[in-house]
Length: 95
Image (cartoon, rainbow, N blue to C red; front, side):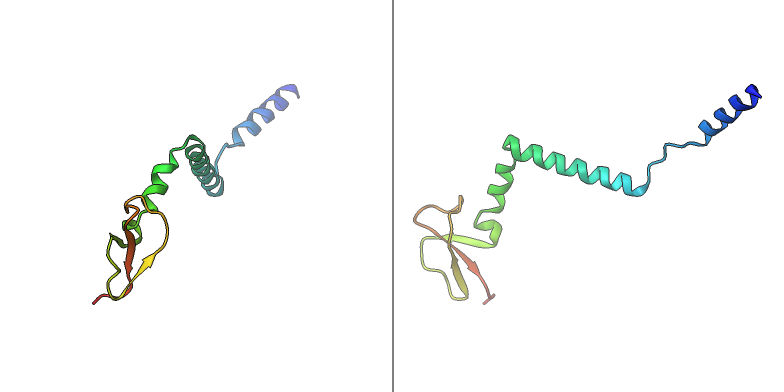
């Protein structure tokens, strides 16, 4: 009887698998991505990325000290690639 109980416990342990489902893997990957982004934000590594996307050129504009050409409008804001005397002109229509 004791031998049967021991064999039953061994067979039950063999049937238990530590398989990860697809949902668990996706959740772990998303959690890891969020963790990396939070670490980048709190360590100041995101400043370079934000500065690159907040430039006049990244928005499709050109820094100019003259008035914007026809078919372009002035995009207000402070851009690192434009000096204080320049404005960011973004073309709306191709001439």
